[in-house]
Length: 383
Image 1: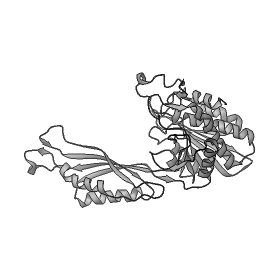
Image 2: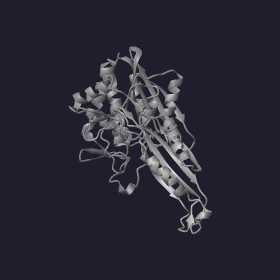
Image 3: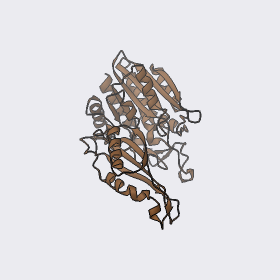
Image 4: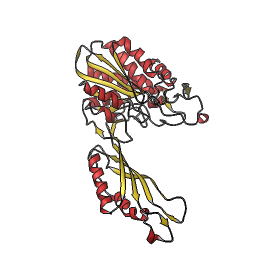
């Protein structure tokens, strides 16, 4: 078995790239891609105290008209958490029981390494491939994600660049490598609702106005609404309260305001505008004095069955014997941005059981098959 994917994964883990720091990961990848004929653009964005590094790498084949296939991913990782709880330094790649441990091992430095080595092997065999091949990398996926992939997509759109297919290296596998890929994600819409009342002594309720009592019927109605019924790819849209707060801490004071944080995870059957309108209609019907601040974390995206999903599923089956499942479960990803300039976006990577956890790991035996699946997909789409 080749150790090239393993070695590059170890090198990337050793880069201390807690978001928004890239930690030298993109330089490592650039060094590997440069001899293969890639051209590079580095886009640095964000304020001085949160500088984000983005890399766009492009190689044109003998017929560069179409398709443009991209690998996408993030070099940043989440914070380690309490170091004393790790069995080994999270930025010193460490082997135990067939697993490679380190922050980012599964999310998603092993995917990046596998993509790079798959590209090296593919181009060695197919130097005159058709279409074009690209990498889109960011150090701001685990953070606010406002200066990362979204900025690269805006830059590409301004130049009229449109991808035909993109594989995002998110860890999607559940029990076995390749058993699940993501062909879409739900949108995320958050709201901070402040219901205004009149503070007063709890023994004189007629001199006050309790916002908890006023808001309770409206909140109960919102919790019971069927927002949509979902579709063949997505579950129904859900509305959940995450935080609710009122009061001064004293038991004899009617609060002057109630603050409620809530979130929609919504599918393609609803839009941010339709959800907002329905919430406001309920609050207005109950006659509440309120303010409501909205934050759109991401819109849903969906890639129906097509050339990319079929090529990836065939590669997984050929390499592992596993019949993959298309899924839209889980949180958001940078696929929501890439889908604005790419009709086919699929996420695929290693097991996600340990992501963001203490002693994060990836199975060493999965690295070679992961690389081979990426290579087989390139062969299917660019030859």
